[in-house]
Image (cartoon, one colour):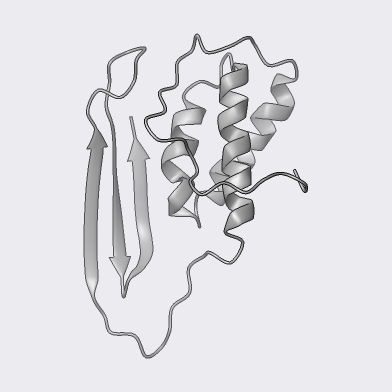
Length: 131
């Protein structure tokens, strides 16, 4: 991945994943390890939390299109190496909360994925994405 082209977003616009996308991945255990690492990383990078949770829904029988989506996350991370959570002692204490949902975004079971993010002084402190 060192020679890959960076991506502007962690997932393509209007991307719909399905359990029927492509053929099965040859090395499932390596892919599962990658997704586990992305889940761990999503604890400090809320910008990838949604797409990591979507990929995690198809871990029983991952397909090649899912691997392409995981590789896009890696390409996105390459384009934003300095992102993280940093608080300044001089910042004002301002609390904001945002929420959103994709209305029936799953093509397999017709369920929605919703999420929220709360900010303190403009920095994310809690977030969640759930199907």
